Image (tube, rainbow, N blue to C red; front, side, top):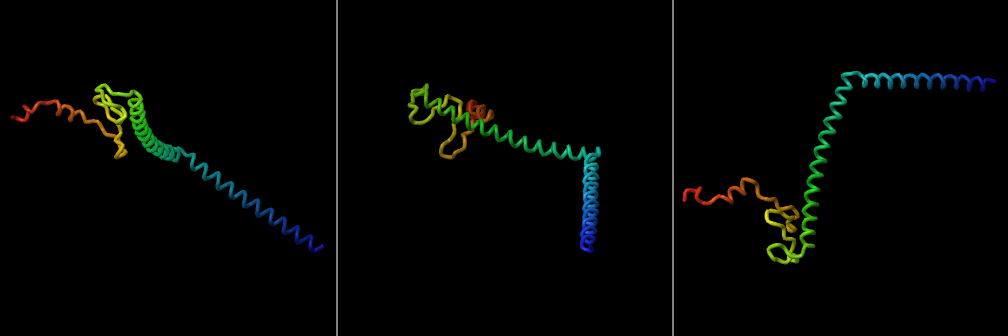
Length: 133
């Protein structure tokens, strides 16, 4: 009979301890959730989330634009190659021949050749008379 009493008391103590532990854990979780739902905490969380979203969105947009530009140039080169000969009579087998004023990727560097800036184009059109000669 004493064995049953020991196991009964052990079970009651274990049950009471686990109930108290679960209640304490639940109470702490609810208090933490309540603290996160306060207006000040919500403002801070929304601000942090917005900053992270803006930073990652800007990077993704820049990456998408760069990829689109490279793909556009690659496809334009394919189209010029399919065209056969360029308007000036050169053979397309030598490589893609862009129309005047257009740029194509530089295969040696792997980086596209950037067109001249507006200022550089204006300076190229000017006659040497502006230099005082």
